[in-house]
Image (cartoon, rainbow, N blue to C red; front, side):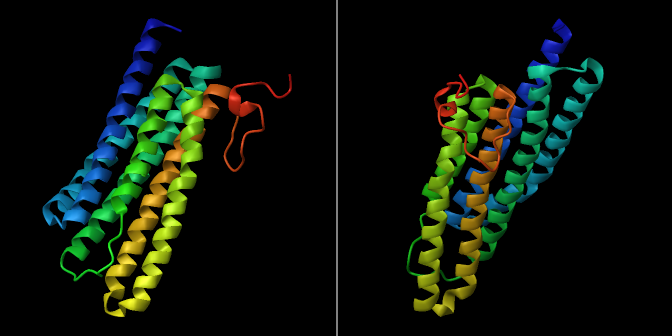
Length: 230
């Protein structure tokens, strides 16, 4: 590897880290706006989405430039491919934050059902998955990437519980059906954040091991860093 190539890869890491930080903040602000009925904060999330879209394009262009100029191979090539895919997942998480903010604006003017919904815990778990998946990328930490992948079950379970709560609330308080449907959508959006964080973790596993693990669990032995084939 040339010194120039190493500098460009380091710059790319910085770009993807900055994008992930902005997306994480977007998600946190969207959930805060929902819980506090803060229309201004929700509107700020909508406005920031344009900057995230531009940052996503910048990362993609940087990846393509490195591929064209340096033609990396092996691990370096897998890293660039992983960043390209992760970049798309981050942009989608930004879109999900916008969707949550839009529903927060709608719900700010609506009477809410008496039952409280713990979106904060769900959002914290999804955000933690996102943060850890990016840490796994930057540190090339296989164990952490696997941990993120396993954590997705927790977010899925909360989403199922939220669905049951909202379904019961619709029966008890049908006058709030519009608000409850929006709350159900928010739960689904947060569950999708967890899915995208899982995608990132799986791309990290691909980058490190050169194996595609989407749609399957790794074989026994692989999870502990062993070679099951000896």
